[in-house]
Length: 162
Image: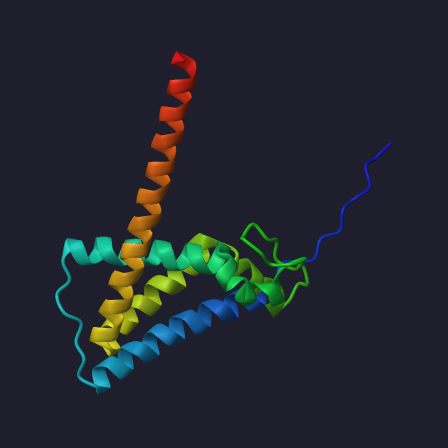
C-alpha cells in the first residue's frame, strides 16, 4: 500500500521576492536619506561589529522567541504564540511569509542588523544607545546561561561525590 500523499501549500515565492524587494528598497532608501541629510557612516571598528552582532543576536531572539513579543508573531503562527518555537501558518500567502520571517531568528536577524545599522547612521545617538543596550542584554543572556550551566554542573558533581 502507498502512503497517503501529504498536500502542502506551495511556498509563496512571489511574496518572498516582494519581501526581499522591500528589504533592498528600504536599505537603498535609508542610504539615499543618509546622503540627503549628509549623514556619512563613521569608520567602524572591530568592536563596533562585535557590538552590532551581539545586539542583532538579542533583537532577533527577542522578536522570534520571547513571550513579550508574542503579539508580533501571533497573527502569523499556528495556535497561540507564546515563548517561541511556533510554526508559521501555512496559508501560501503574505501571512505565511511573514510568519516564516518572524519565527526564524536568523531571518529576522538580517532585518534587525539592517535596522540597527541604519539607526546608527540616521539617528546616531539613539542608534548607538539602542545597539549598545541590546548588546549588553545579549551579553547578559550569555552570562546567565553560562552561570546556570556551571551551577548545574557543580550540583551534578556534588551529588556524585556525596
